[in-house]
Image (cartoon, rainbow, N blue to C red):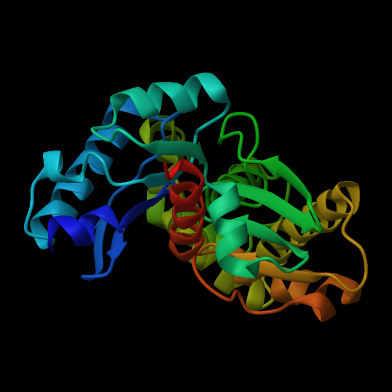
Length: 293
């Protein structure tokens, strides 16, 4: 890519608890890099390492190096950016001169809905909500697995493992799901030992199995997903969602709640117009326009 092409390019980063996607978008084309988890609250150093490696990959694809990207306007939306101090720490650690750092909720919303009124309920390794109505933007969740992430892939598996231990204690009847989880881990003691050292991403790997069990009528799985769907309905009501607004279930686990939502929300569901990285590119373009001399 020529220097003039880089001048008119933007960098976009969408970093979540499982995957970090990076794009260099400009007249010379669009280059994409994909890396691992980039949650800056869970592991700041590892997240920044993934981003830097991704930026280096973009630079190589564009025929330059990291120094060549330094002046390209960039928008970085990351899981774990819990406030201005964390955003500034990320900004200072990046090899970029013109960069806006925010949490990953805004880019997910822009990617899914563009400028249209509506809301997203996002469930990957973690979870969050975002709602826009005219000029108003409301955000909720995204506080991490220790204090939130209700309905997320991690939360679903943790809930299923809690129920599995309850079945071992004879407090609830075992189900095909609890028996499968007990067999997968080997014993109650192994569940406790492994979950204690697993990352949220590692625990969340079994979320599809919980969703499949729920869809097949497993009582434990269905109860967990219904609790997650109830959380969606309550949170959106508190945020100001109303009939007539679109709703997108985003993230790798989000669509699993489709059949558990109340009728009003189920009827409002639309497919996302784009992915979070598409939203990050749009926000990068907006930032570049603001920052232009």
